[in-house]
Image (cartoon, rainbow over all chains, first blue to last red; front, side, top):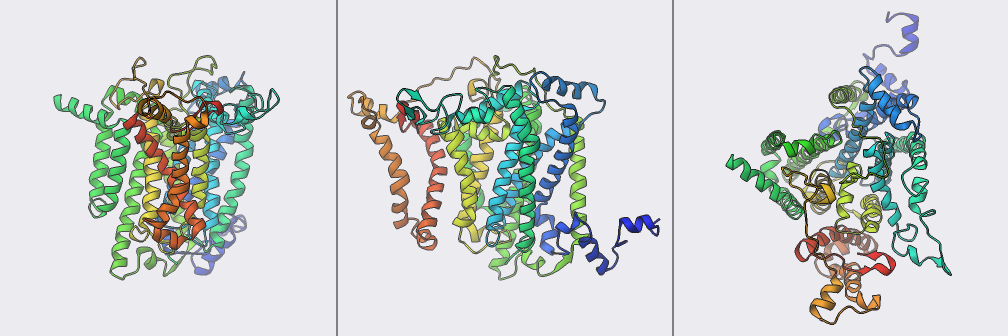
Length: 251
Length: 361
């Protein structure tokens, strides 16, 4: 079979049993060419990298895949959201897609922190990698926002109250939040400029409280908006790892 | 039974925020100074101790009830993962510091002298990681159902209402600071502060290998922030805060009727009523002048004073811009434990209290 035309067309290099073929295997594959052909020996060791960044990226892929499957069944409306999740739970034999998605999301938050912890403890943010650390911090925030927006979607008590507690913070933004410092001072004559219908929380929720507007908004951000931005920044993140000399090591 | 109850009582007592944070801070500072003891095999003892603590605690019905909530399970995992990787990082740092002291290359230095082919060395490590992670995810997902509570009901708020677990550290800060600080300013500064790290830290050493001795101050500040003010506060907010955000020990029943006296007072009340005994002035600027002066002194005057005294070395090495940004960020981080201790010791509510503009610090 290894000699068949189909096999050879699929794996152009064949079994990478010579150094030349090992190089070609890395270069010829769209996924593997994210990596350099040769890597610092410290960079392939778990004791140094903890594989935390790799696991985070892998979890992102798992979440994209399971999220896509969930999108087939889930309608982001107040009427259907909860019953669709209930159906997923009750009607799908051995269904674990929602579980993988939820636990994967929690795990990704933790692995992102651990990745940041490793990068800090090895001083890998130091020149020339300063800006890649900045991108990493943005990706960390996006991960939290992805998890936060997803938290609302099951539309159960856990969801709306967690998001209510979280989004109430936006109302406390100085100047542009209704409960924030100095917001009451912004007025023309007797007319308040900042009201509960135009402040920061309203922008976040698409309403004065967590309702249908918030559900749709969070759904769109969760499924399309944030993943697109995160995917783009991940590409930049990985690109810069390569351009800054691969996985960090002593300089 | 007596011993068990005494142990429970002790743990409940020590879990109270004021002791938990104090113990965590003291333990962290002691730990990084006695690295020789626990970064080797001593860590295994600590790990076994941690597992035993949780295993025994699960036997307690009150602990079990909170710790086995589906969304709280990952946090138990987080405690062990963060603990393990803290040990692992310090273990490698200790070994490298020893090597550097002997004039030998670090572990990473030795390794990175040579390069290996990414196929198969790197690709296989990644494949193994990937398979292990997938296996863990599947097993975890089969044995633990994702939570689904009653359908959303905007008129029935649960008590306690908690944010998603990774924001519970911030929700815990709400006890000490108003929402505009705990929910907006501090999170923004955490993000900005993290981004600023590479530009503030000009120490050229410790780039690309584990070390502690060469980066003592950076690592200590980071560990205080990450381990104590972020992770420990999440644990506190998740496991130890019950109805009405009251404190409950890990083995304590979450009694919705628990009464906690609220006798917090503002700095202005302490000054005008208790010390001057004149009553509160009407005009807000006059009333809050002492609190405002304190804040201005803390943020504005303390950095230059420190630059001339204790932090002189840093000031000279970093230059004025880096120094001011770095010290101000560190002071804001430090303001959190300071406000906590002021609350615990003096029942201080606000340093500055201007309800006229919803501005409280």
